[in-house]
Image (cartoon, rainbow over the protein chains, first blue to last red):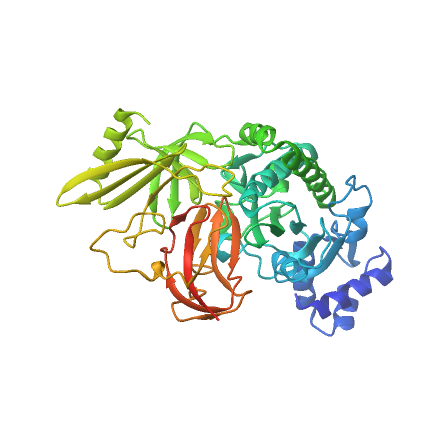
Length: 324
Length: 164
C-alpha cells in the first residue's frame, strides 16, 4: 500500500479513537472510492491490524500490530551489551545492508531492525519474503577480538540462540538444519546470514542477519510448501519483541561462553536441535553434489558426511537437503 | 593414516575423473596424481606453517596450476607465482572461494584489474559466514590462483598482485 494513503487512513482511525468510521467517511478523507477503501482495509489486515467491520457502522481498529521499535525492545531487555543500541526503521531494503553502512563506527551489540524489508536477501542474494509487521528482520553487529578463522562458528551460535528463543517464547521445538537454518515440521522458519568485515589477522565486525517468519498467516504459493511461520505452527500470534529480547539474551550468553571456553558446550546444544545428524543428506555445493550420512559436526562446526563408499567428506559450504 | 585407508583412497581416485588429489589430516598430507593411466602417490609430513593455530581436514580437487607450497613439476611452465616481487593475497580462513557475490554477478576482479587496499577481491565462505576479502594492497591483479567454488585453506594464496 502507498504509505501516504495508509497514513491518512490510520490518522482517521486514530482521531476516531476506537469508534467506528463509515466506509464513506474513509473514502472521502483519502479521496477514493469505497471499493478502494475496502482494498486498503484488506492490506492493513495483511500488516497485522485487526479491523472490525459492522454493517451500517463502518470500520474500527480493534488492535494494532505488535511492534519492534526501540521502546518495545528496550523495555524488558535483560542484556548487558547486545541490543542496548537499537537502530529501528519502518522500512529498509535489508537490515544487513543498513548494518554494513554503520558497522565501522557502531558500538558492539548494535541492533538494526525493521518492520519491513523491501529487498531482504538470503544466501547468494536469494530474496527473502519479508512483509510488514509479520516477522523479525534484524542484523546484529558484534566486534569480537578474534582472528577471522574463529568467525564461522558464530553462525552456529546464532542458530542455537534463535532455536532456544523460539522454544522458550513460543513453546515450539525447532530443528536446526546444518549449519543454521531453522525448521518447524520440515519447513523453514528462520534463515541466518552472517557477513564478516575483517583484516587478514583480526575481525573488525561480524554482522549476523536473522530473518524469522513469526506472524504471517499465509505465504505466496511458491513458498507455501517450504516456509512456515510461528503463528501458523502454534495457532496464535507470537509477540515479536519478546522473541528478539530472548535471542539477544541467549546470544550474549553463548558469545561470552565461546570467547571464554570455545565451542564445546555450544556444539552439544547445537547437536541437541540437529535432527539431521544420523540421517541421509544431500549436500549441494558449487562444485558438485555429495550424498551421505551425517555423522556430526567437528569442533569448528564443519559437517562430516559419510558417502556410500565409506569416505568421510568435510563439508564447509553446501545447501543441505534431508533425504526422505 | 592406515595403509588400508590409503589403498581405499587410491581405488576411489582411480575410478573417478579426478586427476590430482590432495588429502590432509592431523599433520600428514597425501597427494596423488594420475599419469599415463597409472595412479601414484606420495605421503609427506606437512611442514608446520607458522601462525596456523588450528588443523583442518579438507578433501578437495586441486587446480592444475601448482599450488605454492608444492614442489614445481618440471614440465610446468614457469608460473608468475615464482616472481617474488608480486604480493600474494591469502585466505584468512578455510572455506569456499567465490569470485563474485552470486553466480549471476560479475567477478569482483580479473587479471588486469586495478585494485586499492579496500577493494573487495572475492568472498570466502564457511558455514554460511561470508567473508568479503579486501586486497589490503594497491596494485594490479596478475593472476587468480584458485577456481570459483574451490575449497581454500587457511593461508592459501588466492591472488598475485603487482603492487604499486
